[in-house]
Amino acid sequence: MVTRKAATPVDEKFDKQDLDLFEVLAALDKKDYDFYDRLSPEQQKKFVPFTMIQWLSAIKGSEGLSRYYVMSTAEYANKYLFNENIQKHPKLQWLMMCASSPGSGKQFHQWIPNISPKVSKLQIAAKLKDIKEYYKKIYPRADSDDIDAVSEAFVGNQKRKLKLAELFPNMKLTDIETLNETITEEQLKQYERDLGN
Image (tube, rainbow, N blue to C red):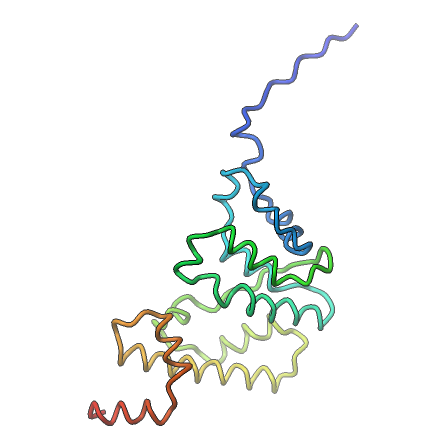
């Protein structure tokens, strides 16, 4: 007769502390709005929206679905995810990411590196070559002329934001983004003329 040892009880707070990236992505693909609520407090602390949005936006699949993920993630999640008020509410960030998913089932997600943080934070100028490489990874099937056009537009826009950051050194990045969208090129030139530049 074989006697079995009783299983060692596992302390609940040490059980299921890891947050499985691929389980999270599968929940987002299914639009599982309640998934975040089912995580333990320890797992919720390991939920990093910045990392998740990078994974969520890029899939290997049909061209249409790949584009949908990029555009929908940008529109429904990335656009507001890092707002200073929304950052205080990870559940809301989860809901925004779920909203960006088409709910078409599990996808194969891939990591797309981010544009350099120094470029994003307007600390250095974007290099056209680097931006082209970035967009080629996001849109592998895109025409090279389209990649060139989008990259040149990005670099030009970032150059303008750098100029605004230089003119208004105490302004927050979000305010520079807003100013960049609202001010015309002529208004910017007039402001520089008024300053004597």
